[in-house]
Image 1 (cartoon, one colour):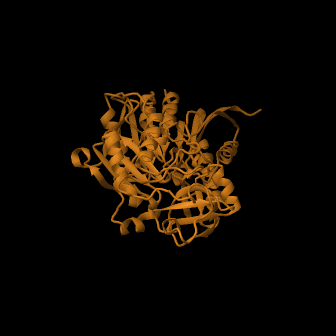
Image 2 (image 1 turned 90 degrees about the vertical axis):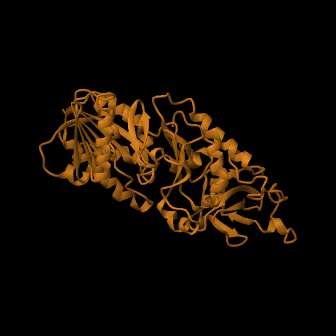
Image 3 (image 1 turned 180 degrees about the horizontal axis):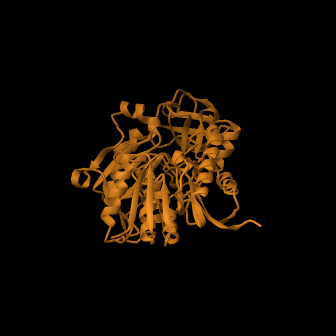
Length: 447
C-alpha cells in the first residue's frame, strides 16, 4: 500500500513505569538465554510460551498473531492481559506479547527481536511514531482520521480515531483492559482531547463486564454538549459521528479517498449509494455535481443521520438545491427486484460479508449477486464502484468475482481503477489488507 509506514524490528514494546505497572524483563532468560531455572522465582513466575516451528517462522517474519493451536507449550495457565515471554523451538528468547485467554488469537506480539526495557517511555515513543506519520498529512479541512491502526502501528488490537475534539479508542482484545488506566493519560497528555470514548469489539463484552468496562462509555473528559453525535470535517464537508453506538468507531474513515474519487466522477450523473450508512459517499457525489443522489440503507437511524448530514451542509458546502432521496430497504433485495430505475453511478459498499475463512464462498457469492444486479441498473457509460471490507476475501478474488458479474449482457466492462486502504490505515501483514475497491465503466457493446 502506498504511503504507509509499518513498524520494523524492535519498534514494539510492553508496559512498565516507575510504579511497577508491569515488571520489565531483567533476568537472563529475557536477554536471550534459555528459560530460567526453578531457583529464579521472579523469572519463573512469568508466563513463558514456546511456539510450534511454523508459528516461530511467522513471528520471525513479523506476523503479529499467535493462535492457540500454534502454542507448543506454556509454563502455566495464562491470564488475560498478562505479558507473555515467547521462546523459539531452541528455547531462546523470541519476543513479548499480550496474552488473551478468552480468544483463539491467544497472543498478540508486541516486540520481536532483542530484549527491551519495557516502560511507559516505550509506549510514549510508539505513540509519537504513529502520530508523526499522520500529523502533517491532513489539512485543516479534515478533522477526522485514524491515529493508531492496531498491529500496523505497534499497538495490536488497539485502534484510535479522531473526530474533531474527541478521540475514540476501540479495543479488539481484552488483554488491553488492565492497562487502560496507565495508558489513557498518555493520550490526554499528548493530544488534549475534549473526551475519550471507549468502544469494544463484541467478542470481548463478557470479559469487559467483569472488569467494569462497557462499550460506548466516556472514559476521560466529556463530549461536547455532553452528547453524541460528534461533528467533524472531512475535506470541508461536515459530518456527524455516533461515537457511542455507531458502527466501527462512528464513521467509516477508511473510505475517505474513495469518497473523493466518487466526487470526481459524479458530475451530471444520477447516483445510487447502497449501504449508505450516514451518507458519506452521497454528500461527496452531491458536491461533485450529481443531478440527484439516492441513499439506500436498511437502518432508519443511519438514514436519519444521512438526512441531517445533508441539511447541515446544504447552502454552505453543497448546492442549496442538491437533490437527495432516502430509500429504506435491504440492498440485496432492492437491487434484485424488478424495476425501471437506472443510474449513472452506483456505489456498493456492504459491511464485511466474511468474518471467518469458512464464510469466504458465501461472501464471494454475495458480492457477485450485488455486482450483477447493480450492473443491470447502470446506464451505458455508467460507473460501478464496488468495495469489500472483508479481510477474509483477498483483493484478487474480489476483483475477479465483480468483473465476472459484469460480463453478462452486450456491454463491455472496463476497469478504471482499483484501490486499497488510505495511509492512515496501513497494512503490514496480509490479514490487515482488508479494504479494496474497483471502479468499472459500462463501455461500448461487444463485437
